[in-house]
Image (cartoon, rainbow, N blue to C red; front, side):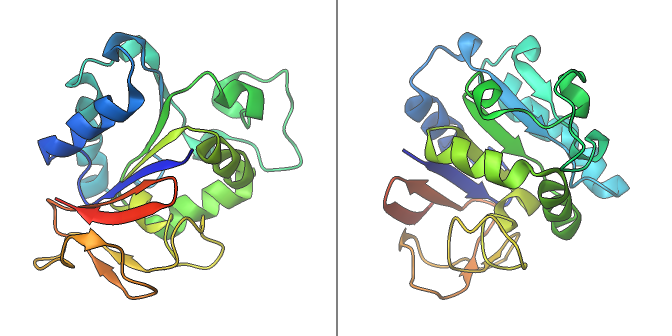
Length: 198
């Protein structure tokens, strides 16, 4: 069953951290996460990477259980060699089963989505999410799950705008309308339930 938490700022709202742990239903020390910093292409976004990383360690996830998966380092789809180290190749569907969650950091959403598509990670990721991998999208990581950009991940039919001063009211996701998220809000998807929470 798919579970996605699409936010402006990760776990800055502590409710989101609690929700994550509740839904994973596993001791934090045993949770394994793919950490994707690829969107961070400028200094502002890079400065936020430690905060995103601390979202995970602050809830008790061990650093050795966080695998930094930099998509820019992966060779392009069609050239992947299974004997390359995991840092430089596309993970297989089977290898993705070793992880409980994926955390996409903020930054340049067009660059992030381009890398997701260039590497072939899109189909592997979508399959893993449908099979229970918990998707956490902060800022750019939230946008690529929506329909803002061509060839997006397609998890929701709405466009998402993050870091808004005024957000869309909490509750059931509106049909095909734009969603505006403050830094305290998130889109929460669990199975066939789609809602805005705070």
